[in-house]
Length: 122
Image 1: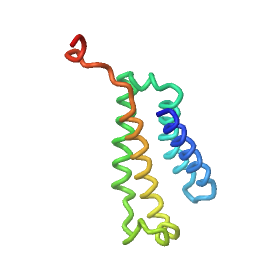
Image 2: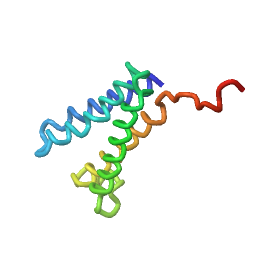
Image 3: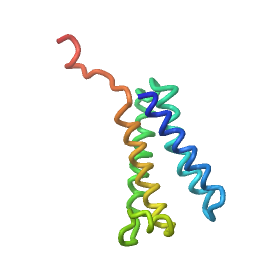
Image 4: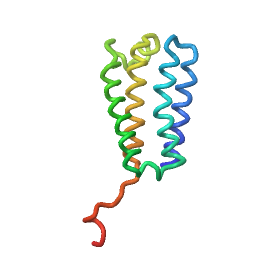
């Protein structure tokens, strides 16, 4: 999984990098930094994800990203087609929020889980 987290981290860093010339680039850099940080934590400090407080923080980020998906959902018909999202910024923003939600959900699924009391001892 570390390789997956590293690939996601690099992808998020690239997304941050291409925001430099956007009118609202600083906001989107911050938005993409959130899954980048969580991916870095998952790749380099995976055991930290097992702590309850950290899991609550991750869950809060996931819920906020889902709200963002609904807020930025592309209203342009056929938004998934390249000729649309290449030209329409709102389609790209909506797709970006979808990617962020997926990335955070992947980190959530890969978090360490403590064994349940009934599972120990056969």
